Image 1 (cartoon, rainbow, N blue to C red):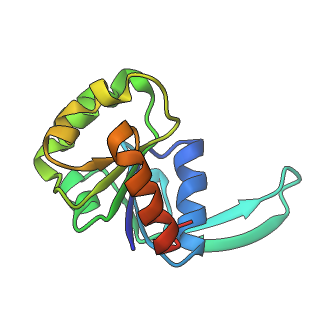
Image 2 (cartoon, rainbow, N blue to C red; image 1 turned 180 degrees about the vertical axis):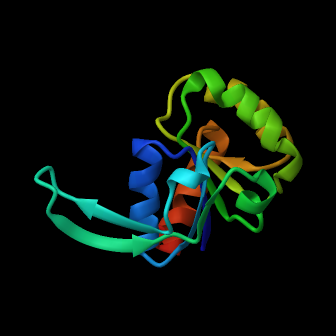
Length: 141
């Protein structure tokens, strides 16, 4: 499965690690791709290495990050989500599934440009049950 993680902070990094460990093709869309390596090493609080995994890439190129993505996980702060949605809308397809992490009230308004493109969203009440079932069936997590 092709997964795009939008946001290279703590949450985005943790999600990238978990999905890459499950052999999904992970691309991180970040404003600072030069700070990323393809290899990510998970460590304990005492800096003991737990495991290493590799992501496909880290990029600031929306077209590259969204190319054939099945899922887009948005881990950006709420104050930038509307601008993000407007910027990525030209690259969205109706087959993409969007998940906003952390979920909060109002995501459906901030992400309206993406919803208008036909993407399935986990924050829309009418799509939640169907999309959650698809995720379980696909063994995504």
